[in-house]
Image 1 (cartoon, rainbow, N blue to C red):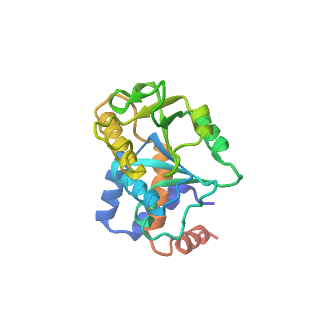
Image 2: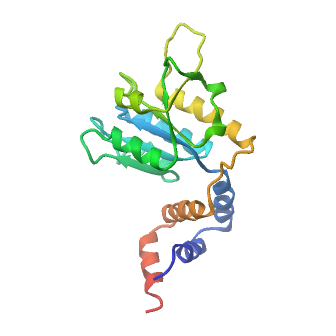
Image 3: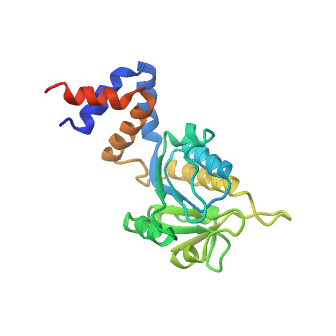
Length: 225
């Protein structure tokens, strides 16, 4: 049985030197320190926009909670972004929010609700040094659920000075990711992926980049038999 590292090295032979160099550079810009959670978004173009922003800012993990609204896996709009993200779908239960939040907490994340709240902080004052954080964004119509409000560890809001009371969810997510990733990269926080995670993510990237990668890996696996 070939190891994942052996398979990864083998797949590198099927892409150009330029792409190998690009992947090697990009993997060092990825982070799991911040995760984005979309709870029951209705409009697929908002999901796609958040994915594109996450990919652009190097946020590797995106969690999609599917309760009433299902993630559109057939969407070609989001495909360019999702191929390079670790997309985690929570869709086994009628209400998937509690299990998703518990899973993230067990993984070491603070759960941060993106909503005005009595104990909220403005985004520029959010403390990144306290540990990894998963930021939850709710549906376009009603925002995050009561379950998230109850299970959240912290609350954050984007300060606004206009007459409009709220931003589009994808715009809000983009502003948050830009602010936090910029601050992470100039901090002493160990925000980059672990070596094991780098290998895991790179393997997924190469599988997407190499045509017929499953067939190629199957032949590689059988080459010693």
